[in-house]
Image (cartoon, rainbow over all chains, first blue to last red):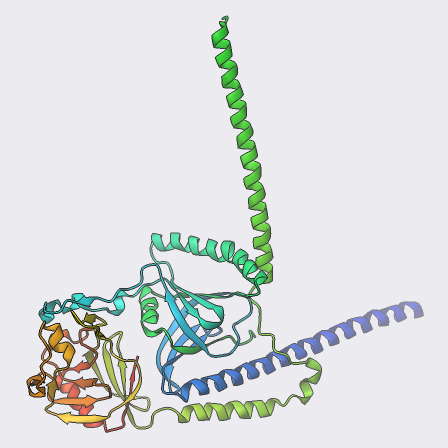
Length: 222
Length: 234
């Protein structure tokens, strides 16, 4: 009887210990998450303050809240919701990025005015470059090697077929490419954002001009 | 059925060709399978290595008690306040060059929303010269620098070149009254928010960089905006 009760107590103590360790580990993890969140928040605000204190437009790409915001002086000018975000590697460092180049298959071309050939204002639209002329699928190339692939979500059969291609590129080609660049000591920084509509995609292409500065960040998951 | 010598020879040749083809197919299949396996192997390594991670913040859990969370929260609040203080005070103008909209705002309240026309983004090159103009509406933060009632347009060189004419030397020949509407608000580098004769083109990108506004909207904007009023064009 004594032996049995001793054994029972021993098992119970193990359980108690384990559950206590688990709870304390959970608490530690939560505390770390909380501190991480605060630190990132502080860093993002500091960087945003740097951007907002200058007379310029800037953007914030919040990967956690899935939104892209165009701002000036802390004022939100425009905001786009992002449908889905995919990324390889850790989130980009919280520092100011500059958009160096917008790359697309069919870049919109500016129309040339022929001197002396005055058009009536009614036909002027033919010579204008408007938001509807912007591409839907493109890559934003930032300094420090960050690349953001932008595309709208599929709506028609062509879009779904293209999605298969994008899927294969993302999971079939990019891991190999990443590995190659890692060997070359240029760690990859790739993000793919899928937008709700093609109009949003065009509007972002219009709004983010080459040379614009901004932040790309993610908060720790809960 | 018996085959003669020539027929037997050709059938043997055919058999050899068939075997060669089969062998080639086999080797091809083996090589492509090998390449595919290697590809998948490295793809998986890449997949595992670059799986989306988290920020690697260097905080040690054992030091968490000494880490002052309250101080951090206070700092965040202060930063948020500083960011808020940068926002424009009073009335300001927002111009969306993509959707050709002007919004007159005071704080978060919209005082007026108007359909406007922004830059066409077209290019004009001087025929025998080296000058080139891009008719974009500039983007960024600006301020109202001048307010003019009944403005006259002082035609710049590009306006003459566009018409296929030589720019005149006498500035008086450049003055064209009545094309800029009743009011104009200058925001630097020759750019203005002004009226238009072509109201049916409002909402389209057709200008040479200025912002054309309908008469009624322009009057409201002109009366509310003061010298120094901030303009945000995006």
